[in-house]
Figure 1 (cartoon, helix red, strand yellow):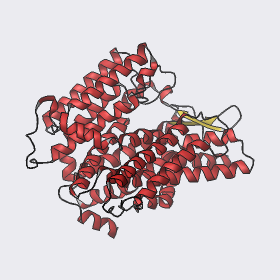
Figure 2: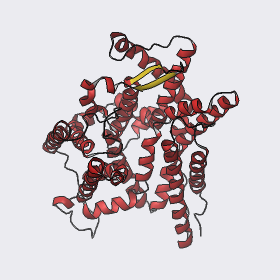
Figure 3: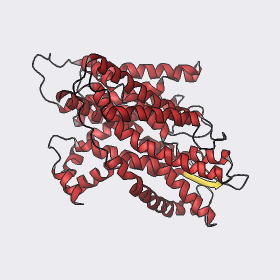
Length: 461
């Protein structure tokens, strides 16, 4: 507690505490949403199996307009990435140095998850477990990694995309929205492959708005810098209540038209049997929801900011953010462990979805999961919380700088390739380690390269 008080007292007056609160709330809602809609039953072989309850609860689909908060995370990510990149450059650092340092907070907790799961799966296989069952369990535990695939692409693109933002402002996300619309046309009328880019374009569009939010917090301009452009090329996000009301209203109208009248599903989360998935890849309907969420965020900004000036709420926000990625990465592993324990004890409830027993089981289910996750965070949270900024790299020649940049890009590419390969491998594949060996090798190679660069290797010519 004393450490939290010290961190709270050292918080600069200029820090946008609201962004930290939104990050903590977004991940908390993702965790509670996944836990809350999970239906546990038994398959034909008598093994525990899980699926989403949304297919059985169509009345709850509009609630996903609030529950789908991954856009909020990308919005806050854009703000945080712009702020940290700008601060790094003010200290005389480079975009490559920023990119290498940024990898620590993302890669360390993820590496811990993958290694622990692979080790556990390997032990289970050696003890005679079916590699298909091993893969199914690990597949479920690694579902959160699909989100990191997109984010680990967006982060390395931050330096060039922020440069585009400084030049073209809000016109950049509008162009990205147009590309998402083009991809949606491919999904609806073909070719379907046209929508592949939406996995990047959709999240980049929201990420760019985070840049605009950051720029709206800055005042004045550097000597010799031209005046801020107006119109679509403006770089600052309007933060007024009027802007919030307009975005909230416009976003809600758009999402109703796109889902109720148009061809998009109402649910913003995956529903088995629906022709389209609004989140994979991001669709126009999801971006409309993101617009409405942004409007609500602006409307709540001032009261939330006043609330966060109090010591208690701000300390709680700091505490959650210190382990926020760990919470996200391990929350489905907590579900796997709890289901396995209850099944072994013969005490796993499997009431029908929507029944009184199912609703009654929600509260003890969430509380039990929270206890298991708290234990996991106590063990693995320090890996994330103790991540320190590496020492600044010394002066380097042009050749060394180019080499570090190339290796940093290759490192991130390894992380993305490994996580993407794991996500694309079917859950019924026979994998003795749970994670496909090529995926594990690619990921660890990328993480190793970035770890080597963070140690200062190649920083001098």
